[in-house]
Length: 255
Image (cartoon, rainbow, N blue to C red; front, side, top):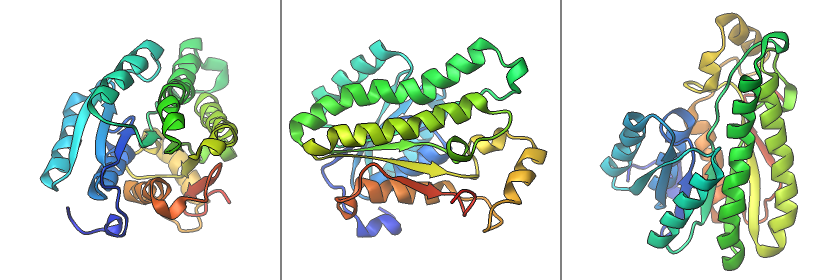
């Protein structure tokens, strides 16, 4: 694999399931884990072309992975996909809940469907995955769960009450689950990105972006690779005494 930050970390023999792995932050996470030696089960919902491109990039660098198309908001689909993966792999060692959508709008104009779809994907999706995957992690007394939240879930963002609520809920979910699974040596943490190139922040208007960017002490967007590096750390043996934490990758936007 190409030399990068992952060269210092070995995930050889590990299986990582990454939801929303087709592009942006998800793609960077998949590549980073694969470079460290993990087999990457790459989940996507619709964009097969982008997902296959991520898998191709993993292969070009000598890594291994497989595509797993399913909707994280569908509990039956999650159960079926996880069962299928465990028939081919001995365990799921790392779960990264990265799948997320946004349906922005002022609350007075927000449709019930806009609220429900965001909560079902961003928050309930993580619940469905964790409920299923944690069973095998508990049996093995080992595992890492990393949930990808957002600075919007900590500081809030006008026009994103649904998205902010889903990500704030994910942070609370992470802390509660970390306490629940710690006695079984399953570590649960959260990475909270700020304004990241190619992420959901691309869907904001330039006015919204400029208003937020002016509050970032580093005065720039982060890169998907910055988020991936935090996920890699939490996936590795370097974080064996870290659980229930929120690692902020936001350039100082929220402290």
